[in-house]
Length: 191
Image 1 (cartoon, rainbow, N blue to C red):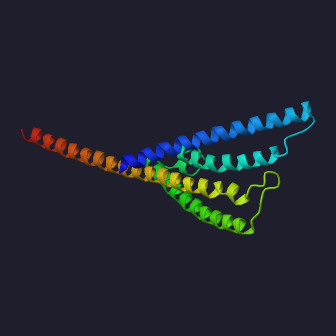
Image 2 (cartoon, rainbow, N blue to C red; image 1 turned 120 degrees about the horizontal axis):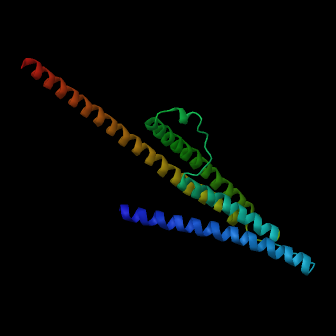
Image 3 (cartoon, helix red, strand yellow; image 1 turned 90 degrees about the vertical axis):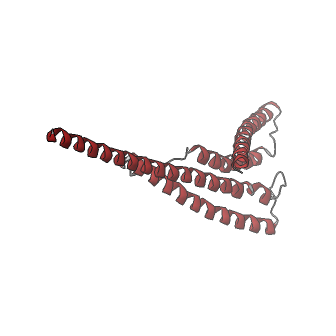
């Protein structure tokens, strides 16, 4: 079962990267074509601004998920940097999990918004595409962000538990060595 999730995760990561690269390239090509058309033929592409707007929405929400996967979101670490390494790991795990909850709530609200836009039947002005289709990327990107924040948060919590167990085993081993050393000293004194 774990193999399926690992495969799915790798597939989603590649799809996110491909969509991000494709969207940014399309924004660039669309903008260049619009400028060339405006200056060489005195006519710009009528849909250029709208298409870039849609692509920026896609880059924003897909990029959110991609950044969450890579732990590349902007963070305020002034408080957590003062903590010992083990407690930093726990704090980061809790922060990521709370962020996952917040993004899950945003996902729910985004679905609600899509439903309202869909009921109104609004179309984009230039391309005449239903806006609900365009905005659908928001809850999808937010959902994948929730999954990634949860994944990273649980990984930090797991690391905290490992560090705690390791710390306790080192302390326990240290106390055993101290006991042996004391026993050896007592035997030497007795001789």
